[in-house]
View 1 (cartoon, rainbow, N blue to C red):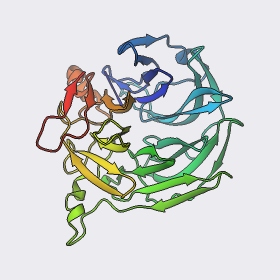
View 2 (cartoon, helix red, strand yellow):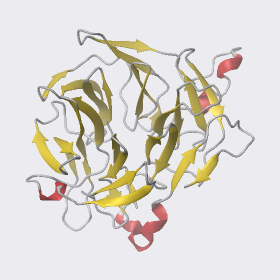
View 3 (cartoon, rainbow, N blue to C red):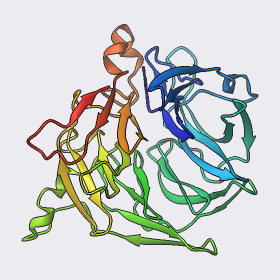
Length: 336
């Protein structure tokens, strides 16, 4: 059981790790989901043995290919105070994971301010990391690019969207979309598209806002989409075989059990059947065989020591698979 973990996929395996655990501490370990056997396995915890490695939650992760081999990259995040001497800490360290050898390599630190609850994605052979929050209610809208071939950072890249934390990002049809998240506790409504050309030039484009517009039928329910700490995934398991982005779960929105499908070709959102299993936040999402999944998470972000006597009630260890093309009035969730 853990909240605000990270996840990434390499080959036939999904990895889920780090996060804030049921014992109210930050974890360093990872679990591996074999998508062929559909079984979870423990991964030997080599990260904890690295000098300066720290457990954390609210971190980021993405994958990138170097010379034909896929690596995972994790970094940033937060260590919560525990009330008995451990002080809160915001992180900016950055690491590369080699799944073949189960080894870690420390890379140059993230160039921006240390932070938690940032967002990351891979596009055009690069990794992108931005937004998030730090101490004293400081929030960010800066974005930086990581080149996995040279292991160097560049930026700030001039993100068009507003400052936020707890956002989500997805990549579909050669473009990334950054959306959702919170700003001072209020859900963000802007959606920003990112593309990278053959020369590595980055372009940002504002998409339709997630808000109702008078006399426009299509977006009459868009006010229920914004939220923080949601998961997103791409699924092509609908009846038309097309790939669509989906967002689900989250916190501090008007209806957090709603699931929304995004048609990037039309820049339109459509409500699907609500998630099952109750409201959940800080989960992770991934894709297996074209289906979207979510797992872990809990009922709140950063449960405190006050709940230690019943901490398990604040965390989830269930996993759910989403079946597309089921509308709002029919069942669409299967416990897995």
